[in-house]
Every structure is written in C-alpha cells, then in structure tokens.
Amino acid sequence: MNIREARFSSLDLETTGLDPYKDEIIAIGIVPMEGLRIVTSSSFYSLVRPKKAKMKAIKVHGISKEELEKAPRLEEIAQKIRSLLENSIIVGFCVDLDYSFLKSTLRDFKAETIDVVKVDRFLGRFLGERYLNSPDLDSLAKKYGLKTPFRHNALADAFITAQIFQIQLLRILKSGINSVDKLLRLLKEPEQPII
Image 1 (cartoon, rainbow, N blue to C red):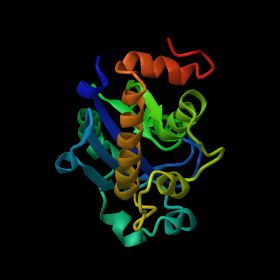
Image 2: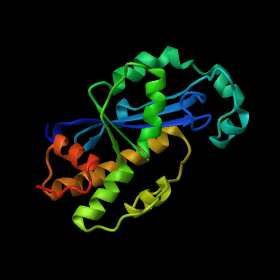
Image 3: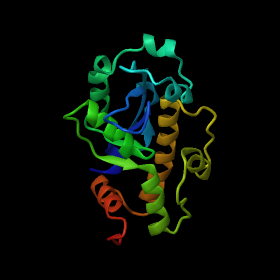
Image 4: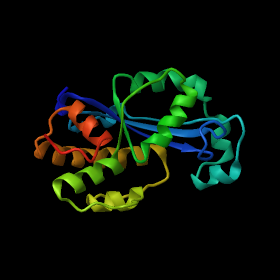
C-alpha cells in the first residue's frame, strides 16, 4: 500500500507503571491519520478507571482520583478503541510499551507498529540526517520544530507524536520510499541498504 493512502493512528497511553501485566491504563489518546493528513475530528480521548488506584503514579499524569472514579472501565470503551485502531498502523513514541498494554487488555488485537524514535534513527542512518540517541518526546518534538505546551496528557502526546510522524513521512517520501511494506521492512531491519 502507498504511504499516502495508508491509515495510521497515533496512540499514547498513561499508565500506573511500566508492567503491562501488573499495571493499568488510566488514560488513552488516539489521533487518526490518513496518509499525510491528521484527522483531528476523529481523535479520541478517555480517562480509564483502574481496578487499583496507585495514587503516586496517577498524580504524575496530573489526573485526580475523583476524575478516575468517574471514568469508564477499559472494558466499557474497548470496542471503541478497537474500532479506531483496526485496519490501522499504530504510531507512537516508544510504541512497544503502549502496544504491550493494549495486547494485555485486548487479547486478540494485532496491528503493525511504527515508533517515531526508530523512524528518527532510520532517517539519520540512511538519509544522513542528525538523529538523537535517546530522545524524550519533548526533545524529538523540538528537533522537528514543534512546541509541546501540554504534556503528559494522552491526547496531547498522541497529537505531538502524529505531528512528528507527518514530518518524518514527508522526508521518507522525499527519499523515494512510497510503500508502507517497504518502510515497515526497513524499520525492522535498519542495517539493510535501501534498494
């Protein structure tokens, strides 16, 4: 499939920790993209009521206990999440962690993923662009000329990630890579030469 016709979804989760089998999702943000266009009107954000509230972890995200008590359980919004992400390539910042949380909850869910950090390294190695060794989302956004006024909110972070990815896609297309399959292959095997 051509990159310009592909469906991508920028995903960001806020969680109570880093273990997808012990910790829980407390917020989810999804920003859909159709090729080179961010579809903000179809964005999705929800807080998620955890089974066990780890207040120390929750406060890091600026979410109150009261907000979480009013939020739906993940099971209540699982179908909505599924419908937004199906037939889509999931894009994220260090996306493997968020994807592992989704997989532990939506057990039979499968999707291709693209990590904007890996794309940045790919652009650096193969196109001679400067890349950051261990970037955080703020430094990656700054590199691409983006401001990050609202952080640690799942929807805001998903939107920033979508913007970064759109800039990266333009550079990828400019290099002559037009196919999603080729891009996915090159990102999985970054040492292979571009053919």
